[in-house]
Image (cartoon, rainbow, N blue to C red; front, side, top):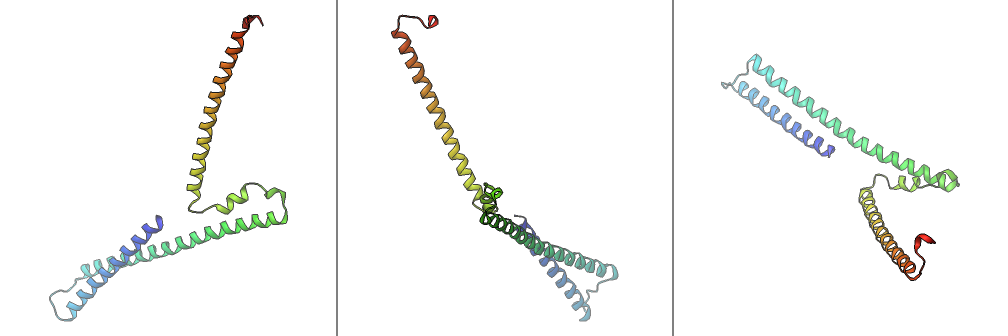
Length: 160
């Protein structure tokens, strides 16, 4: 999302540079052709200042866009390096790397990871609800059997 915002800002800054450049060129062209539009000192400085600011913004957005691409690629490379290091440890037989960390590291950064985790969470919640229902059913059956057994004897429960 940030990359898209920076890209939009870059396109806008390029448009502004183009508009200021056209404005400056048309004013210079009218001046050379002997037209009535002559930029005075303060007006010319104002147009040149706008040109400078728009060019500065374009360069800043361009560098930020480029560096965000580099940052993303560096992140992916670091994840690959860590995953490969875990795989090397696993292949060498290092007992410390046999945990779930290696598989989790291999899947880190994937787009479907969040969806997969949500599905796992929903499945575990269904399992919990099923176990609660089974527990309630077993408790009811235990109480029924206990009442049935205690009702058939002539000895009350508290005397046993």
